[in-house]
Image (cartoon, rainbow, N blue to C red; front, side):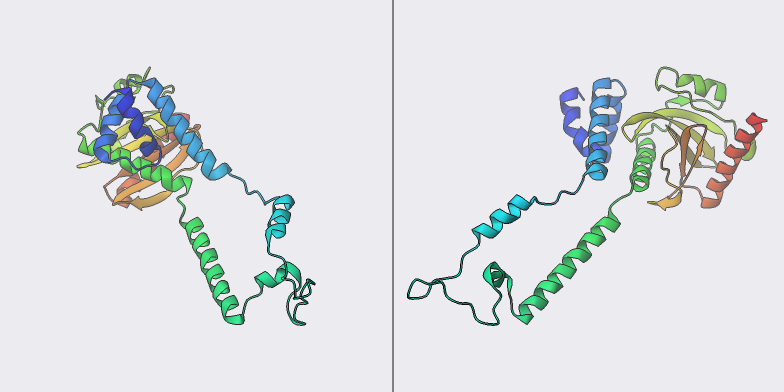
Length: 268
């Protein structure tokens, strides 16, 4: 895949609409193309700014006045004088907005339905946590179906950690959790939220456990199930950690606790 072909997929990737096969091909291209990585980051930043930074603007008074001036004026009678409105008719332009009770009831029902639809769409709008969870699941699945769960294969944390040097701009913590039943398998670099991140790969019996190490301490995914995968996240040392596996929720909690215990042991 060259840059011209990749750029046709960047917008779909930013919107989370790219297929699995194209996603794998694009991911391999992004590993060696900083310009396309920057382009994808810009698209995702623009999408976030558009979704969360848009403001509401009220129509100016001049526009209202122009609309009122454009409304029809009352008709004249046979002598050229303006016809007098009926005693109970609304005066001036307001008569154009006077409807019978059945029409008013229908309009009210339409208004209620429109407001309800807007509230439903707002409530179902994916949150940053949901978008992050979807991105993590997609990355985990890509690693499984492409047989590329690990770029570096080693059970030695002192081999895996330095492998990331030069591939990402931070040094992820790599912990030895074999004694807790979660041996280290290796690691890889993947793309989440438009940036290269470290992914540490552990094993629980026959179940892989991916740990995404994301710079910053923003939103996580909490503890949830998505597409049959267990996810849990936590913050530590200025990093966000998101673990995902198809093992049981109990196994994932044991993994997170083992990670935290190892973390506490390093502090002492």
